[in-house]
View (cartoon, rainbow, N blue to C red):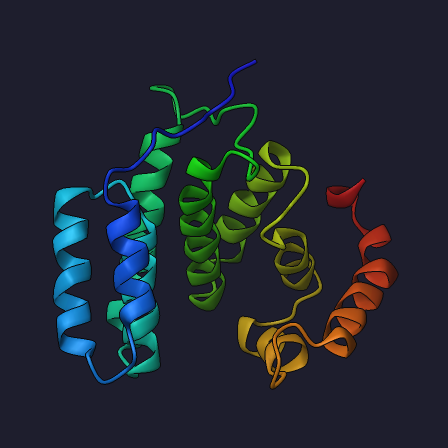
Length: 188
């Protein structure tokens, strides 16, 4: 059994500080700092995801999606064997893997947005198989795609709450999942 555990990243604390210091008014300095971290460690994907988030909020959807996609592609190169096989386990509980899982989830969402549904399904299925605890909520995205729900419809239905930790939204999402997941072998 091949278990993937990424190495500790020297730029992690610097990135967290940059993220914590971001206040919206220091956007140029933040972007420059994030780009510098990416330059020094292109295989630490949280800075690229953060930059993509900033660009997305600024309406730069193409640039944002390209960053998500590039981070996901690099993550795939990092974790897969030479023959393209995924590890048997890529667990969230190993803190060093979280940036990889987030990069892959975001790449799957880009596939979904770009109507590359089968690519998204394949990616999300592999993530579920290697991280069955599903700390990133991949099962919900996967079910939405299988149910024919677009990424935008999903966001409107389940994520446009004023409070992302809103228990009513979470309850609605869980009830929807419990009702619809049994239709598919993907979740058994």
